[in-house]
Image (cartoon, rainbow, N blue to C red):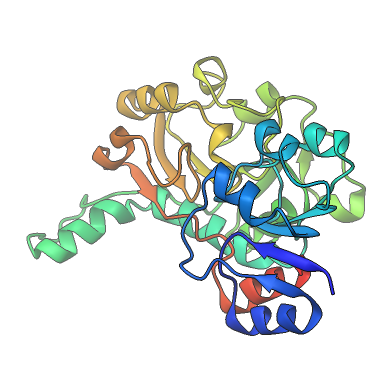
Length: 300
């Protein structure tokens, strides 16, 4: 029977499922393992099920036991794994696409709405019981008839677009390749990010994290947006360069920002916490029982 290291706990029923298939080594305390612990604990294993909380860089992968044949990543991507290093060791890397599309798209809409309608400020007023109604109290931005730019029109991007259409939004997108008409559904394609950003009253970031997309939202590209744009990120934190984004939020160039992911999770840049026009969630994109179970079972 193959032996598998689980770097973090998964849904209980999925762990029972895995126990019937493999000899398993569970992380009982569910703490983030150090590099040394991952290497030592997987020493007698055939495979590893990893999560976004571990970074499998060249240093880890080059020191893994020769018995390791696969790293199965619990997540839609695998930017936390050095693919080139894995290839050198003939280690297969897999992920869990498709099953978290709907849940993540729902969170994207949530943070778009949260950022646009000043939910962060509204919650504080409600809890403090110190608000009084007036005609201009917490005026926000309306989604109806606004232009939504989607950066990355893959499965999740298209699911966001489908939901945004029900709010009356006009869909624009940039992708590595243009979609076929049946997938575009009347959306407007832009061949480059400058063109897309320039018409984006709202932007939903749904692209994968690569060297090409790392900090693609930066001081230069933020200037492409219409004044007062709303940006939402449910992809990966490293898509946004934080210092430039914070400057744009303070100046009003960017009206508000919705984040479900950010650099250095969970250690968010402190300025984001201090800004009233930032709506933040703790990486909840796939956080439903149905989705997390499906991800667990697929990884297994």
